[in-house]
Image 1 (tube, chains in turn purple, yellow):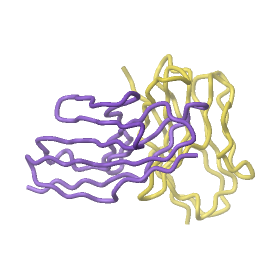
Image 2 (cartoon, one colour):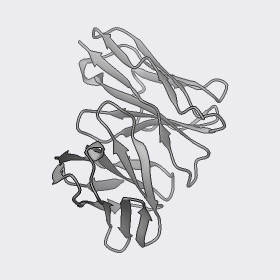
Image 3 (cartoon, each protein chain N blue to C red):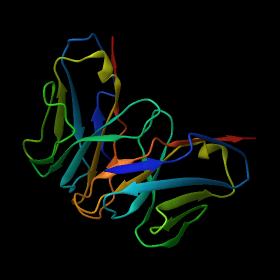
Image 4 (cartoon, chains in turn red, blue):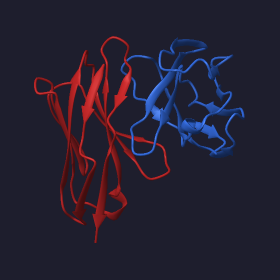
Length: 110
Length: 114
């Protein structure tokens, strides 16, 4: 099975940077995903890491260290619309099943 | 391109009543997933289909939950009878294949059991 931990809440100011950490313990690993979910809406895909290192996509970057069971999502130049829940999800190697963390609610303040 | 479509968006029922949710995946996506998301939690997989075959239903409470995907396209998830603890958001997702493909989620059905 998978055990995935991420902080419950984070608050930051518009224009700032926020880093959301995710740690995991897995029985198999075949990739880590980050999803964004606005209140009452569907999770939307943000990023995917399967190899160690940093993946950058505009204002969002995601990092993975497989040996440490650790990932982070970095949100730069925060905007009000970035206020949402950010879900870390790990995919198993045998069944490709996605296991999600509980999500981190990010609140961006003016 | 249309995304994953789900209906209804909201449903309120009394306990012991039946309820059904419908999902139409992204065109061409062979793999379909049903998740349940409780308040303040991440989605939890209930069942996964490869075309019309249910290949992972280990987390589906089979005493009251059932699902079908008869023609390998749209799918229905049913609860009968519903219990108070079934109140949650039921999300449908699809992907091109079982492997490394990204899953895309629908807007979900928010169920409230009174």
